[in-house]
Image 1 (cartoon, rainbow, N blue to C red):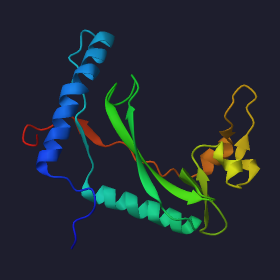
Image 2 (image 1 turned 180 degrees about the vertical axis):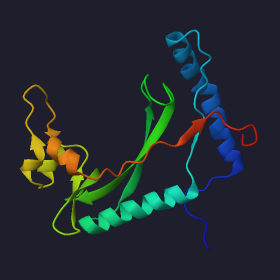
Image 3 (image 1 turned 135 degrees about the horizontal axis):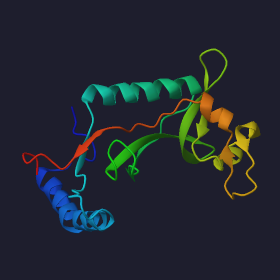
Image 4 (image 1 turned 90 degrees about the vertical axis):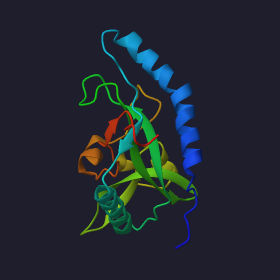
Length: 176
């Protein structure tokens, strides 16, 4: 089997890890210590996901995309932070969002049930809905906001394809 594109050496990984350690971790730790001086905050250094869970996620996204008759273009990996009242308060996390392409535009999507087992791929960003030629009934008009939002009925019946809730912590001493 040929080595996939993007595989890096241990030396390159160590350099990336050290750069994050030297330039990002101190800023994150300092910011969080200012917010909560009585806590000993340590920045998240890695997230892990079980191999089978990742395979199941990819299979789920592939199935939803097939039912919606859209290609999967990419997986966007967003950096994020849990809110104060979450299971992991103020911890960094990430979430994964699949993308597809329509009319030359790439967008993150979720799916809506259609007839039978079919699905409709809908952009996460509702402002793209009209540009991509999707039904205007998917949108609510919010006079107070500039960006239209998805109709709440649509969101309740949709299938999210966003993966989160991975294990996170400072790295084990055995890795880097």
